[in-house]
Length: 184
Image (cartoon, rainbow, N blue to C red):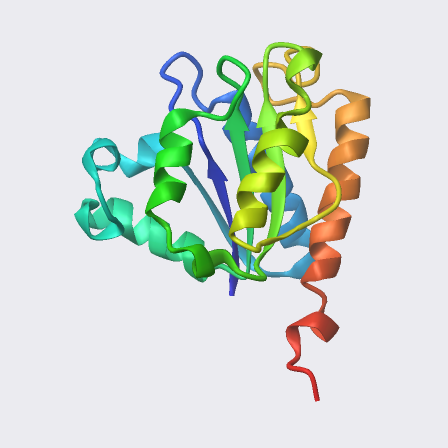
């Protein structure tokens, strides 16, 4: 069982992107609390086959392996940069390829990054409904980071750290041993 982080970014400008850095921080924190294995990938890791794919079967083998790990994960941390007030287009395209029941009941932590605070509601107005469609079990606290919250070295501001800690605690609780046991 593992926790998979997926950053819906493919930035050539900063490697890793701020979105991937935030997702990575969350995944590492949850893994520390739960003892589960973990991995993080982003749109760049899926390569060019994603853009031309009409189904998951159309993905290149390496891209398909990443997506299969995400779908098999015990929990998922997803993040997207905000472009023109919404999540990234290729991020949504990937989710368009996923069967609706594939994420049903899966604990998910929702995250986003943007240039300023005015994009913070992307989690509540776009990501939460999107994952609600899949019937994923999104934790109550979403994490948004504006440009002032996360620097290029991956350092988090104190308010962002506090919000991240709250969300990580919620995701770890969703993965507690009592919740992993089948109901009697």
